[in-house]
Amino acid sequence: VYDIDGDGVDEVIAAIDFELCIFDGRTGKKKKSIFTPYLRPLHNSSELMHNPKYAFDRLNIDSICIANFSGKSKASDIVIKDRYSRVWAYDNNLNLLWEYKHANTGHFPCIYDINNDGKDEMIIGYDLVDSSGNLVWSLPILTDHTDEIIIGRLNPLKKEKVICMVSGFEGFIMADTKGNIIKKQVVGHAQRISVGNYRDDIQGLEICVSTFWGSQGIIYIFDCIGDLL
Image (cartoon, rainbow, N blue to C red; front, top):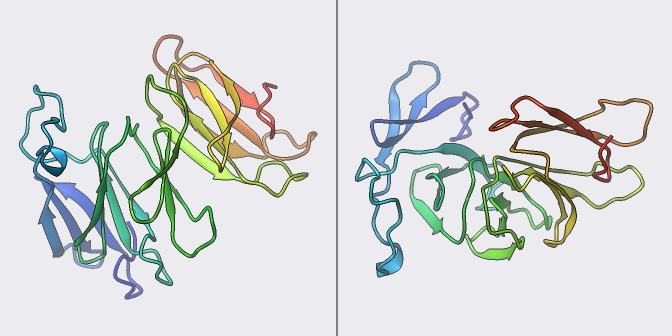
């Protein structure tokens, strides 16, 4: 739910019947739509985009988010992805801006203007991607996939922001914005992550991580520098 055309009223952006659709939030009337991408090889390569057992000819969208890759005064670009190899970015008229594939994308990208140039970057999987869809860096991790990502300034004694992610059996990972791993701790299958002032008796913000597959429902609290509390 987002005001994608800047008219002051929210639209509903949804994937229905292999279409990416924009609906008027007041009436439910479809304003724009396109078919989701056909699952073809990338750039005329022989590589298959998907598992040969994939059931459909067109993309069944895994997640949708909003970004400002175009450098406008307000975010108005739409990001969609598959599970777990490729990403597409569109403007608010559903024109394709770029598509991206490098490594396992995981589930949910994190959109943030890291270099303060007025255009968003995208952290997805273990990769940082610029506003044109080019790989900037990739963490040296090759297995499992990232479920959730956050970025922010957690430590009041440092001005630098950190990237925190939960990546299945790769665990909890804290990295800087240059692609260097600060902390990494295997905690079982790390599935969900949040940040808050969970402990007001210590400085900074804390990171909450919970597990899923295997030993399900374990909750870990880390401090602002990534040490387990």
